[in-house]
Length: 208
Ligand SMILES: Cc1cc2nc3c(=O)[nH]c(=O)nc-3n(C[C@H](O)[C@H](O)[C@H](O)COP(=O)(O)O)c2cc1C
Image (tube, rainbow, N blue to C red; front, side, top):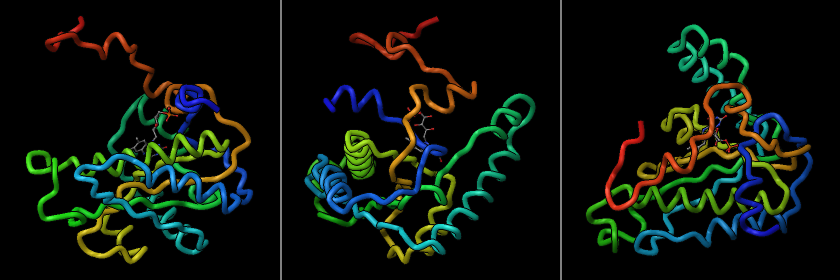
């Protein structure tokens, strides 16, 4: 699969996981792709926790359901009705999960390129996640990013040490298919913003 095809075929997956095994070689390739990401000061501040244990995943899933309820309670009217129909995770159905973390202390204290922008470390972790997501797509696997959790809960669940932040819980595995339209667009939650609306030349312009 060429790069542009993978970029456009990539989807956030919740409902299409089959639960079939992921061959070790495939898993290694997608992790290796993540580990090849650029990082501020070459800090490589990420770690990957592979979560296969059913009990851990069930406990995380229960927590996600509680956080789903917290968010749902903030909605009213049409938004509440739409959200009720949207699946927000495939924690139990996917083959495994990969939790990606950020260690701010790695490569410190003098991180080249981070003195003015503390978030540059987090950006680096997100680039590793995107590499993983695209590589998984090229391997015909699905990935679903779950962010309905409180960081202290997840850190405690997986024994992540103080100072290391969980950035993403990724559900990973074979899928029946990848939808051509994002779930949130299909459910009428939000639609794609045209590229032209995101484009500015020289100075910020506000489109009517
Ligand atoms: C930082 C981040 C957090 C996300 N968290 C969730 C989540 O908790 N649950 C969910 O269903 N999708 C989550 N998503 C997926 C987005 O909803 C999805 O990327 C977006 O709707 C566009 O769809 P697509 O990825 O299929 O193109 C997350 C995506 C990102 C980048």
